[in-house]
Amino acid sequence: MYRNMTENTYRANTKVIRIGDRVIGGGNDVLIQSMTNTRTEDVNATVAQILRLEAAGCEIIRCTVPTKEAAEAIAEIKKQIHIPLVADIHFDYRMAIAAMEHGADKIRINPGNIGSGENVAAVVKTAKERNIPIRVGVNGGSLEKSLVEKYGGVTPEGLVESALDKVHMIEELGYDNLVVSIKSSNVLLCIKAHELLAQKTQYPLHVGITEAGTVTSGNIKSALGLGVILYQGIGDTIRVSLTGDPVEEVKSAKLILRNMGLRKGGIEVVSCPTCGRTRIDLIGLAQKVEKMVEDIPLDIKVAVMGCAVNGPGEAKEADIGIAGGDGEGLLIKKGQIVKKVPEDQLLSVLQDELLHWNE
Image (cartoon, rainbow, N blue to C red; front, side, top):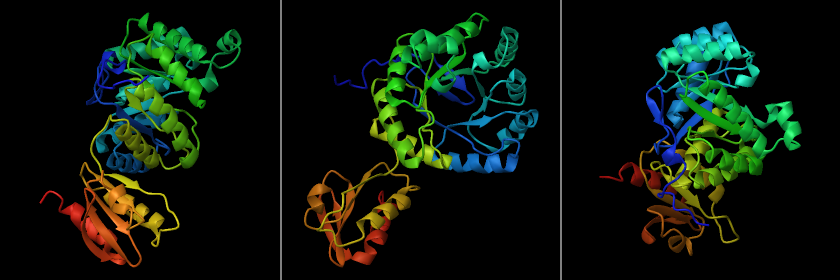
């Protein structure tokens, strides 16, 4: 059934959590997160990558903290970046404490893999003293054996039960500054799990399809899964997990949010599929246009069409567009032909129009 996303949603009712200078939950914007793939101990490389991610639109960054040196590096990294930093912890509770002591804005842990209840309590004590949010993360690949046996495999119900068990563990220690994430590489399982979890908690949810794959397959899985989850009003931060340059994760996340009506800003490029009428390198032209508009701060739609016959009509919903012909092309605004230009000038003419759009 069609859901109007301006109506009451799960997202509007989630608890408000502050991460550094950003706020999530309670109907605030869905924020884009990514993760570095550098060695966190290498401050220069990590900072350089984070600055690239910031420029692409990343709003929260996560760094792995497997060693004492990585925890100590956080302090220096924080001095040189401009977005909140989340410390990703596995197995060693001492790294969680050290990361918070060195300035992490949030930590990500699975309480089930950092040892005894005393270890969890020590982490929560430090978080409480510094009012640092904890993201409780559970993945399908690490679901407890007891829950796998109980539900006959990795299931949405098992993921939700595991996550809520961990949440309750921390709540019993007197802390509720929490974000929850449950991830799986199975798109349908992940969707169902989020539907169940959103009905059982009011903590903000970080959503994503984990281990999604390479840029091509991972984008498809992430767009499908995140699209359905976000459409239901679920999710307060998102990550598109890709095997590749993390900048691609941010670009994809921005497109998903924009196409779900959850983010404005940036130029949307639409282009037609090629056909036998095409007499220009439409594929190359569309790719050049996409690259060209990345840093132009306009909130408009640009069309790239391959046929000068149907181009104007097909581009009428775009603010501006170009359509190729045989050696020449058209500049189009709101479906109306503005002028003809030589084919080799199409890109430069479009760029000039965009750079002087508000003049």
